[in-house]
Image 1 (cartoon, rainbow, N blue to C red):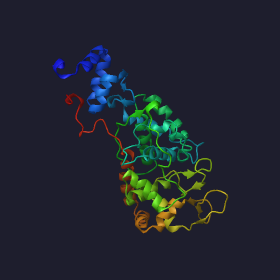
Image 2: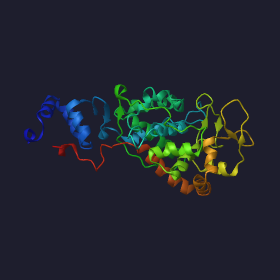
Image 3: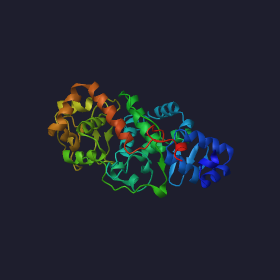
Image 4: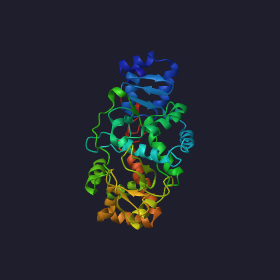
Length: 336
């Protein structure tokens, strides 16, 4: 049957592959797309349970225990020496910035590839400080060598939200890692500029295929963490509970009083205590009527915020990803 089915080059490559490696590739191929498996058989080498091709690295799903990955991520969340005692907020930022480069028109960017490991993307001003998150997750990667960085970073954001009290985020594995030689050279400016207004937010998020409701829901992640002068140039947290996921960000927006901070740094706003801050892209959500209705909704209804954030964040993490186990794709053994 094989002689009738497979092209000669594939058959020869298969026959030269050690039996143990063939078993790995066969198991991996049951969850793969046709493009992945073809390149794996022709141009790949099997190392353990990872098939390495000329430009991508795909982890065999059968070899990664994602429940253990989740537990390992949770184990590295807390650190009294980091910010407010948790890496959770910066893990969310890592997942968001790795995914938020997607362009629906050119079909470039997104979480697939984990291209933030390389220049120029890792050097963008918008990604300043994220090396701390990437380094913190290296121990998890060492424990699970067949796990892709793209899956690790996005799952870290999911685990962080859930562990800090947020909603359950739909997430699935199957992202791949690019290699440095073929990493996309994405242009800077794909991520939001916190100093701008509502049209800028729409330009950024509409490019990804997201709508006004999703813009506001995702902005609610500012309920976590704080800004650093050494990274973004801004300073202070948005809320008094920066390691708890809640609708407090929206409550602060609506109920607090915000005035422009008098200092030598970039334009930002502060509350009467001077301890909390908002960015221009935060306050513009109050000024734009189409945004404001969702701000008011989420300030009053945390369940609605949790529901919409879970949906929008899951969508963001999957932008541009062609999952190898997508049932809409033909199995590799049906391509001839």
